[in-house]
Amino acid sequence: MTITFEEIFGIHQRFQKIERALPENSKRRNYFLAACLHFNPDLDLAIASKLRLYGGFIGIDNSSREDRLKGSKVLRLQAVLHDAAGLVYEH
Image (cartoon, rainbow, N blue to C red; front, side, top):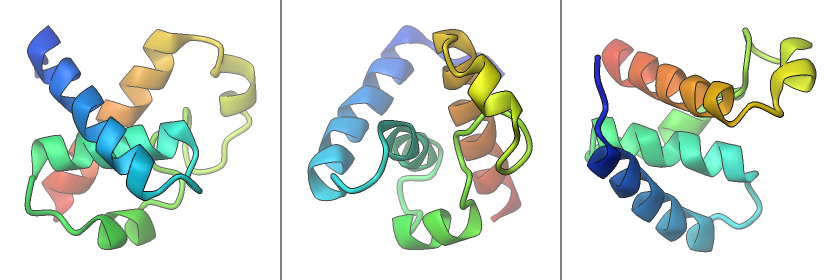
């Protein structure tokens, strides 16, 4: 799957709206939810949040890889898009 700059920009715009609505979430969590909405605009964010507690994190669930690799912006973006696409594909 290829994602364009325009799509990344659209995810960022969604992120900004979610960030205002859910300031208690981490930025990565809100980017994950924004990516979920990008792939499926009808998705209920509360359901997405409950189904993927660690959505957008590097590695499987609460992996130790997150702490070691979170400095890489590319890996963080890949984790967000991978988890969001997987959630939308499954549901």
